[in-house]
Image 1 (cartoon, helix red, strand yellow):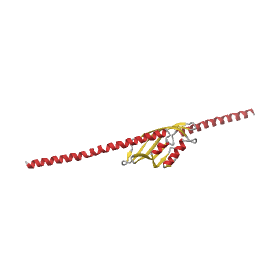
Image 2: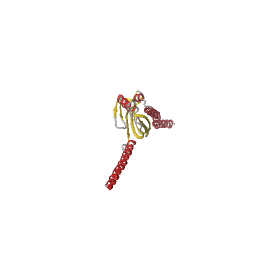
Image 3: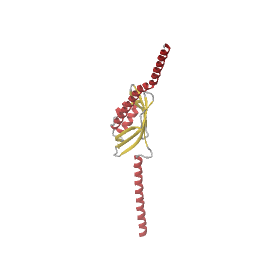
Length: 206
């Protein structure tokens, strides 16, 4: 009886150990998921802040949320590094009498959740629907692609790299150039036709 009771106790202990071992991954996952969700919420908040700042031409808020050594590749192919260079670029494009952009409305959409590398580095990609109004009165819409690397410093997420690009073979600037060229081609053909008509008429009169 004692041996049987001892075996029963041993079996129960083994069962409890197995249950604890089997539950450990689930317990770990439950502890990790809230932290991961929190990180993604923080990154969404950063995206919203930067989008709002860009649309309102709030350069100081943009600068506040980028890394000291941020790198930025712009849609027109410019490249700047560091906070002050980023500030100078936006001031050149959007501020002062010599500005190029009068207003911009941009909406950033992520492809998916950011890819996390540990708890302090994230990479995100997506597309943007942009509307630009230039100082010269031109306005156009652009479908763009972007990628961004964010780092967390002292509990705050900041943009360390941002790359912005559009389709070089299909965009509103090229379309405007095509329209101008077509207009010039038609105008040139009409002028040449008129010249030919008058030259032919003059020869007949002679």
